[in-house]
Image 1 (cartoon, rainbow, N blue to C red):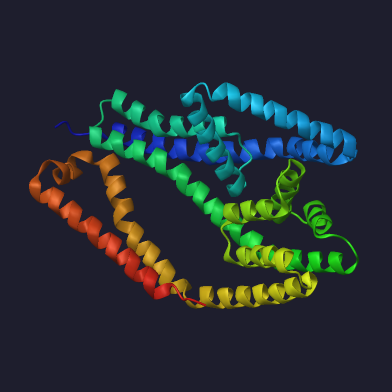
Image 2: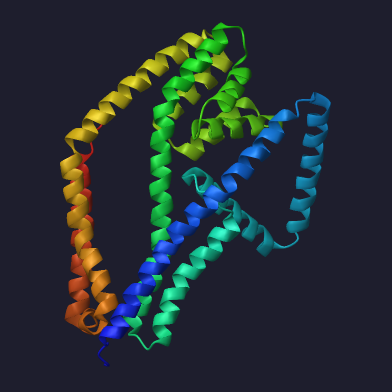
Amino acid sequence: MSIMTGLQISLFVLVISVSIAAFFILTSIYGGATRERRAVEQRIVKINVNPKEIGKQIKDKRDERRRRIETKARSGQSLRRKKLMDTVFNELVLAGIMMGPEEFTIMWICLTFGPSGISALLGANPIASITMAVLGCVVPLLFINFKKGKRRKAFEAQLSDALMVICNCLRSGLSFQQAIETIAKDMPAPIGVEFSRVCSEIQYGETLETALNNMANRIKSSDLLIAVSAVSIQRQTGGNLSKILDTISVTIKDRLKIKSEISALTAQGRTSGMIIGALPIVIAGMLMIIASDYMSMFFTTKVGRIMLVVAAVMEVLGFFAIRKVVSIEY
């Protein structure tokens, strides 16, 4: 096996670093560039309040959607592609990334195959090229997952105030749907954006319960699920909804307080677990890129493969053990 030169090692490290940095920079630039345009489009949609025109637009949208579905139903491949793009779009919206699904997919493919292809053209070890491809594929997904978790926490922090707004609106004589529209107009993202989607779904023919359940399925928040379940039960059995939501708002505030205290008490254990768990993986990935010949014995020899399997099993067991210790049910 050929030994990599210092120039090749530097090129590999530079390519993967620039590619990952470019992903974050382009994501931020695109989000900032389109934020104003998207806000203008949302305001234009909200200005049109003529019921007849809204009804006509809803009917036209339904007919257009039906024709589009009927056309694409003739081709199973096109239908699957649309479903995939819808999934990517929902993930980007939940992560708060202002980017189209096609643009993100193209960027994701470039990060996956760009650095690995360049390293292969430079005559690198196949292990290094495969490692770069794996990193380019996994890093954007981890970034989206991180942004989704951060957005979910921000949503839960705003949920208690949103329920109080609904209670005040109900007590002042407004309907529940009007209270939702008030939240969509007056409260900032992410909760304002999500309630705007609920209003849009209702305008396009969905029932209130279905729209709320769709939001709960998107956010996957236990606090939101409690509120949505209470609203659904109240609409079926009756009762004082403002008093119910007031009680749920206080409960959510108490849950957030307990969650912050638990997070502070378990911060050291969680940080230690993340560092200890990620350190072997990070070091192995770096060595596969800058010293692939040194790591090739783990893939070419029987003893090396056994060691890899044992290390992977121990990593998984350690992850679940630490997670069990720091996870507290409340």
